Image 1 (cartoon, rainbow, N blue to C red):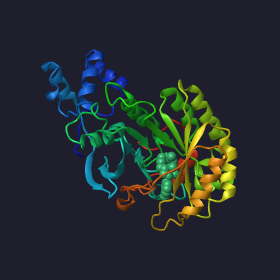
Image 2 (cartoon, protein in one colour):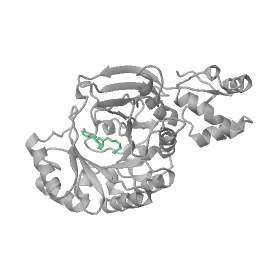
Image 3 (cartoon, helix red, strand yellow):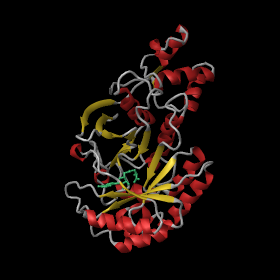
Image 4 (tube, rainbow, N blue to C red):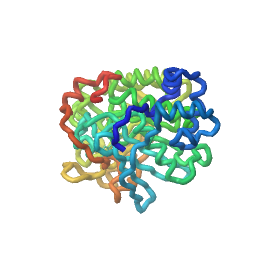
Amino acid sequence: MSESTTKTNLLGMSPEKLGDFFETIGEKRFRSTQVLKWIHQFGVDNFDDMTNISKVLRQKLTDAAEIREPEVIMQKTSKDGTRKWVIKTEGGSSVEMVLIPDGDRRTLCVSSQVGCSLDCSFCSTGKQGFNRNLTAAEIIGQLRIAIKSYGPFDPSGDRRVSNVVLMGMGEPLMNFNNVVDAIKLMMEDNAYGLSKRRVTLSTAGVVPAIDKLGEETDVSLAVSLHAPNDELRNQLVPVNQRYPISELIDACNRYLSKLSDKRVITIEYTLMAGVNDQPEHARQLVKLLRKLPSKLNLIPFNPFPNSGYERPSDEAIDTFKQIMVRGGVLTTVRRTRGDDVDAACGQLVGQVEDRTRRSAKYIALQDVTPGASAAE
Ligand code: SAH
């Protein structure tokens, strides 16, 4: 709800921040763990329902704090079982999230910003312009809402959401602090307890923020490459003008080298007919990916009105894939899911109010320092 309140919303607080909050109200840090579990493992919204906490503390919390989840304004289910939610955010805009069931896997694709500032030429979210960063509560709230939709809250039972991908609306690394807080909650044992291999952050390539991410977490990383050379990538993914491919590959290698286990970077490559889907592009990509432990996920372009791009034929997709496979690159083609409810990659638009607050180009090229929030 948009009623103004002076209470602190505990929903998006990382375990550390919740501990800090407890200190500010004169409580011991360790007491925050119980509250963390109530919020994230049992889905409780009222402190009075936290029955193993003393009445005095419950009252103190009720006076100072609240647990406020974003409001769901629409929910649609696709013929293939993909579910899409439209979530109202503070300030009147909305964002979308998508749950993709696939056998035992249930992957939730969450949004990190209202709109996006990076202006990739083929992405409908980018065409919406940029409004603001989601709060950590609005990001983790998406996971909480998806899990609760299965009925009684029990994230540790059968994993209702087994994987999270930060591949919805927005560029997660342009909303660094809030995204990191939300990721910490996703991976925290006393909250959602998802393993680092089951949480994936996808970035268009904000190089300094990739380095900073490696200092904060060991989440899995996906990179939206979409072109095998700078000339083409500059046009499709304008942030490349600031951080060219070679710097991006170096940052990815630095990220992998910090991890304690052996993992690879997922490279996303949206195939657009006649733009980046030619055999020559595939051959260049094979060479490029020799420099990075990676696997390739090809995404056939999902059309939207006036995009100016087309999806390649199945034959062209297959030819591209075969060149990659012969070149030794582990390659999958992403199945299109949920397109009948506009839930496929690049089709998430939400409702971006006041999209002119900051010029997209300005943010894309000037304001990509990690931690600096593009808009409060
Ligand atoms: N900003 C981040 C997170 C968005 S992820 C990033 O760029 O990685 C969404 C993925 O879908 C990205 O790889 C994006 O490039 C891709 N995508 C965007 N529009 C698309 C479209 N119309 N069809 C297919 N894939 C698209």
